[in-house]
Image 1 (cartoon, rainbow, N blue to C red):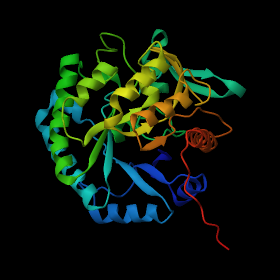
Image 2 (cartoon, helix red, strand yellow):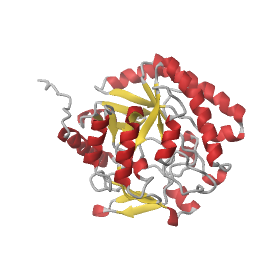
Image 3 (cartoon, rainbow, N blue to C red):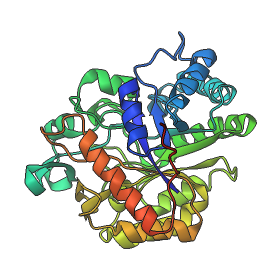
Image 4 (spheres, one colour):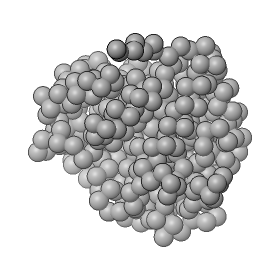
Length: 359
């Protein structure tokens, strides 16, 4: 295992900072870049050049974002459009392979990553959280994450961000029942996985964040909001390229006893985990806050040991660090999370890459 960072369109200075912090591999979201040609197809030469540019900082792209946009909702309302979008996604999977990439991540969120407010933590820091009893459309609009990559200090509910990632407010979408939610996800998997097999690319899917109550929220079910849902998802294809972006925080949010649930999920799904969002929460199902990794309800040291026992050998990416006016771009908090994670890995016996000093 090794530490990594998930970044959206990082400038050169940000990549240099990652390298200085000991990061060797990164997960990149391409929103805001010029890699996309008209029609949504990636430019293979620009993507190859982008990969080489990242590598010039001593880094490697572990996974690249495959933004599926609104294809799942469109499948439920305009299947012909969804199938056209799927053709573009399949082209991009092959282009990623041609550009020298080996894995892509995608997210099946339809209505943003729902949050209801901020809670005050140590030293006055602000934790993003979800509490079903406090839910309102206004809180959703103000506090939910729009976009599924590295959170920034953006206005999380602004229209441009939600448009870029294909997510919409719940009131703007049709009802998504358990049956229709699975039908849409099955369609996506059946379209993408054969293309990934042909290209030799791994596909890592992020579960629904957060788990919704039984019956859904605003008429929308989150079917990938439990171990049972993830198990059904994995069973949709026997391909070794079909797997998970295992968001440890999201899995912790699914249960009243987050630590036990996370360890159980690691043990079950490790062979199909292609990347990990290594974050922690306080609370649990339907009432939680996203906190620093060292103070949550999941024992992060035991989590590392569980990944180790289960044979996981991939990237650990800190994710959704808290908010503070003292760290507007969350870089210091991310650095803290990276150092904490590196310490856990060293305690478990992992050795960092040896740096040769230049004269």
